[in-house]
Length: 228
Image 1 (tube, rainbow, N blue to C red):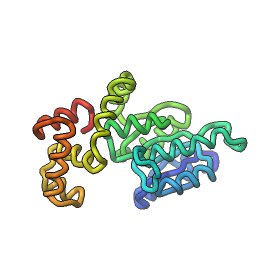
Image 2 (image 1 turned 120 degrees about the vertical axis):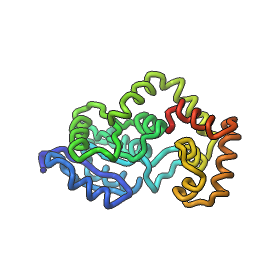
Image 3 (image 1 turned 60 degrees about the horizontal axis):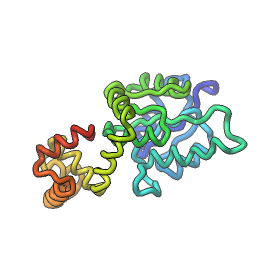
Image 4 (image 1 turned 90 degrees about the vertical axis):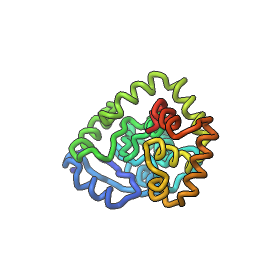
């Protein structure tokens, strides 16, 4: 274990961290864990791991526009310039339930070397850790095509999508994705723990801000921008 790839697991669910730790290959050594942005930055600074496995959305972040995962990556980048920094840099592998287009683009832009979903097996995650530690980029199969498309036109298409999403609040974006995926108002209310009336209000605001007239148009809009 001591000669294996040293990793830190960053996720706000302790059960997931424990399960992942037990599922990883014996060649992967977990040297630390964290549940939020501040503790992640602290444990990364202390352990200087080879790879950080982190969720995209983490509590404790200071930024309004950045996800917690982005803040961890960018906050840790300063370690590379310190005198005691290891010769090999710490690399980041996003491991998330989200396969939303903007989450993938933003965390890769921040500096992550890969992005896989939490549906991956322990063997798959271990292989991804080895690949990322070796300098390769790794993506879940269903995300690979999107990543190639997105970064082939990152300066234009992604900027447009970001601009459009900036019109919506964080809650409106959550409602928008669920409605675009075909959820009924009642299902959205249950999923987000809000009232049906509040869902209706958010949907009206989303349609108005995006200049759309129906749920059908919203689904088409989200699909074209790979937000589903």
